[in-house]
Structures are given as C-alpha cells and as structure tokens.
Length: 509
Image (cartoon, rainbow, N blue to C red; front, side, top):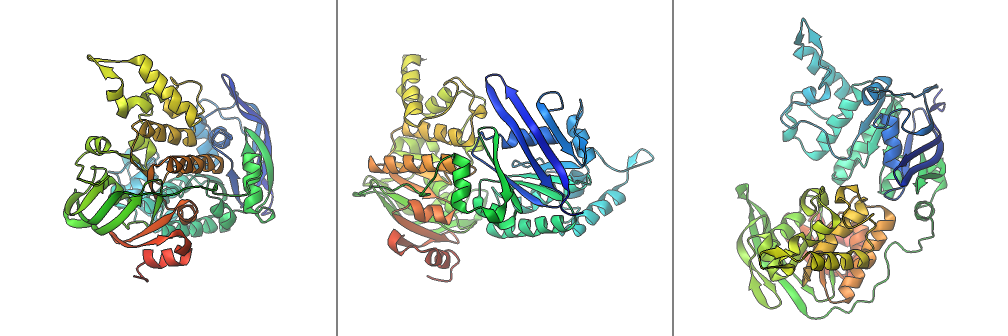
C-alpha cells in the first residue's frame, strides 16, 4: 500500500545543557513519498535527522521513533544499525574519498569478499547495477576526484542506496549544484520515488520544496509547527510558518543615494594560476559607486568567483587591465595587500575560507585586524574585546558569549561573524560572494537589512549571487558575466530576469 506510514515521530524531545533542541516533536511520513522538512537554522531539523540516522542513539532522547511498524531502538553501533535497517543519509558536506573509484566509495567498509580477498568484479558489477537502476550517470571505475560536484552527489546517493535504503535523507543536497545538476537530481528523486523509496528532503530553497515534495513539515524553535500537503502552502504562508510572523516582503526597502565612483575595473584579463594557458577572465569592465550595491549575475562557470578572488589578490594572474580604488591604481597580489588598499571579501565558502571554526567568535572577528590592537609586541586584549563586542552587538550575533567556538553557531550567525571581521577593517569596498548561501529565510532578511544599512553609510558593495531573484531584489545595478567577460551593466529598472538570462547565456550581446 503506497500511502501507509513508514516513519512516525512521537513526542520526541532532545535536550542539551541549557538548550531544548527538540520539544515534543510528532509527525508522520508515508512510504514512497518525498517529504520536505524546513525551518530556520536552529529549528531542530538536523537534530531530528541525527536521531533517525543513529548519531544520537536510543536513550539519549525522550519520546519514540516508529520505523516500518517497530520502535527504533538504536544501540552502541547506532549508525551502522540504522543503515542495516534501511535508513541512509546524504550530508551537505560530501564524505567521499577523492582518490578512490566510485565503486570503492560505494562499498567502502562493505567490500564483497571471496576467500579472504576483495572480489573486484562483483564490487564493480554491483555498483553498475545500482547506478543503472536509479539512472545515475557515473562510471563505476571513475576516480571520484575527476568528477564534478553534481556527479559526486550521485555517488553519495548510490552509496546510500547500496545499503538497500528504505528511507533516504538528503540534507541541503543542491547547495553546490548548477541548475542542470539540480534538474538531474530532481529526476533521480522521482526515480527513487517510483521504486518505493521514501525521501526526506531538507533545504532552505523554498522553490525546490514546491517543485519536488509531496508534503512539507515546518519546524521552529525545536517544535513541529505544521505538516500538510505541499499543494496547501503558498511561499508566503510557508515563510510565515517558518519565522513565526508574516513577512510581506522578501527584500527590505532601501533608501540609498549612490555617490561618486570609488572602484573601477577596466578590461581585466587573467589566467588560471594552475593552468596558465587557460583564461579565466577575458575582458571585465565595471564600476561601483559609493553607497551602491552592484550585483554580479551569471551562470556557473561564468567567472564570477574567479573575478572577485582575483581582485582580492588570491587567484588569477592578471595579464591585462587596470583596477582603481578611490582614484588610485591598485593591483593586489595577496589578501593582505587588498585589505590594506581598502577591499574586503566575504567568500563563497565561509567555513573553508572565511572562518577558523575551532576559534572563538572574538578571535575570528579580530583576526584580520590585529594591527589595530597591537603595540610593543603585545595585543591589547581590552581593546580587542571592546571592538569585537561592538561588532557583535551591532550585527546581533547570537552566541552564548564571544568565547564560544564559531563552529557551534548557526549558519546565519557564522556569516555575521565573517561580515563583522571585515567591517572592523573599515573597507571602502565590501565584496560579498553568495552571502546568503545555506542560510534560512529569517537570517537572509537580516543580512539584506545589514547590506542596506552599510550602503546607506557609504560602503560600496559588490554582491555575487546564484539566486537571480536576490540579485534583482538587492542591487542598484546588475553587471552580467558570460564566459569570463562582462557583457553589460544594467540599471535595476531594466534588469528583468529574461534580459539577464539572455546576457548570461550569450543569446543577447
């Protein structure tokens, strides 16, 4: 029977010291459906999935989980037990061994043995069977590091399905995928559904929930707020359930009056530092005014991130072109030089490039600004604390204290820490590369308000975003890139989705 219950959470409560992460959560998931779970960062989604997948075994939480008609009581080897029962999870951060083949990764730790040795023919044959059954377009013998992110995601799914999964949990599966790869993933999920596999789909991207899910559960502050068919929600009602208040506008109104040009790039050309015969920038020209937000749009591979990393002195080898800041020509060859000149960069990968996760909020904020607190071979700890506290309060960073490790914060608050450290350096130009990636709708709105406030104070902001709605909703002008070059810069009144996409794909010139 297709619509029978495969999974039920009954009054599940999980407490940590001083925090109730889950508070009496109860809802059901039907067999063979794609069930979305959404909510702001800290809503309890990940904690609930960790209970289901065995990270938190039975006895570490109150309430019960009923799986396939029986209470789930996972013991000491809880994660392995969950896998054996048919519960698999694909995490946002991929867990593959890049130097091994697809087949080796799929059966890692569970290799088929024959007379004490691995039966490689069976391993690759079994891998091929899984890949073909679920239409995963990957070769079993391919080395993982040679694959793109989209195909790596397919390998993760194959790995989960090799354990004969009945329930597949996908946590932010499209955060690093292109539009074409997202389309392919949606096709794969439909195939899984047709094979009777239940999928739990966790994402901050609301359009994906409406595109692929049958039902959606909304969580807030550790509680289940509502569970109902996707067709019964609108985007506005879903956001309202998530944040606990009505949000009449996705992007806050701005009162900006851009001034004179403070940053200008003329005919910039640059080479890939690892492959010096390949151009990554092939003629980029634009300018940014004081108190303006310039959005940079383009498809994946257009060269947007390569551009801002090159401007920050940390990527391409410039072979032609000029960069001007406040009327003076600059050519940073390192982040230190870029910061000294008056540039700051909020990177696309905040965890890998923007933060030292094991360090405190205070140390992360002060790290690029230590020259402000140093003298006579020592750091003025009081000045460092005072400056970091002012930044933390002005951006309303939610943390137990400034000494809390950044890795314990939600994604939105981690992003605020990254922004805080750069604001402390008092930049003339703030570059923000996908500033709301992986952040919930409530935290996004706070970041948008902050961007408006900074621009109103005169900071020139360059914003890259993979979300075209975001670019159009936040920018004063939009510069479109295609194949490493700037095609056109549009006033926001002329920047329709159709026009931007025509320029980004090279249809229009």
